[in-house]
Image (tube, rainbow, N blue to C red; front, side, top):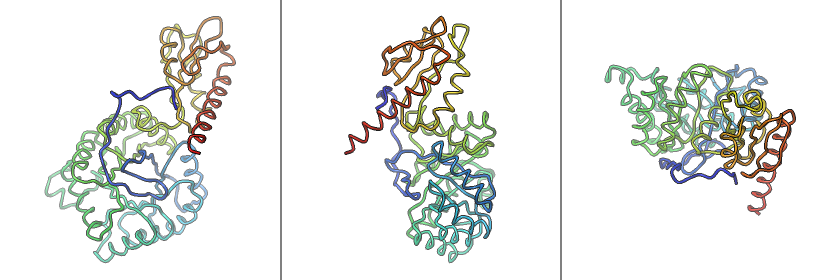
Length: 374
């Protein structure tokens, strides 16, 4: 158990939704909020796509989406699914055969809008393929590609139009007695997306996939996503998330997991609490934290680490973390374990020592959890 407890005033009551399966990952209900990304390699380049999926999984991806625009990509998907350490979602647009082929290839989920793939017979065939192969679906509504009749009705993309689109597509699945689906209503406009998601949450019990689409680059996109998705998550809305960035998919996973950690919604890996640094710092806080983030990426056990440059706030922050280091003087600082002063450590040996202490604490937590489970 982490030394940083959840206080009653920090609890978030999540919206109640039904639960579906995306391969081995439960989505909705009381399942942890999952984090996903999408590959940007050519799907036909199997080796590159698998490498990107693995890299995302290594930093905490629960689900990865892969585009399937043509028959060659559908054929490549089978090997990608076989090698992937996480469930694969097949991104399908318009062509119903790609949906069938993706389900047959072992995709865990189809991202597809049933109303866009043709006749009722074609929709039925895709649903049957999904049912036969244990494949769920995601209805993905985007403000930038709303149906013509809804744009004519509402005059522009708006929350009402987006939710109406989502419910129209979901009714097609429900009319075919298929209920293993989640829904997203994404927009690049934070206010539009947030309003649409709030209306959707009131209109259905389906699990909700959150995202601010086309959010931008690493910095600007992270900020937009934190504002839009953070507020929705704070309201209890959202069962799975993707942070859409013009950046490496690995960065999307890092931001997504940090977003959930900051809200206390999911604890995975080391939560580093660090100061912005000032003239009082006893060591180079910024370079130290950058190095520790890299060297502690492999740890999945939930725990907290405080890295504070001086004794103004350092001891207080260390009281609430599993491991802490507070800068002092004369080239050394104080190491805290479980909120208590433990021993001094020189600044030049501090990074290696902190990594060792965090790894040791993670091993203790894991051993305790295994013992409790036996």
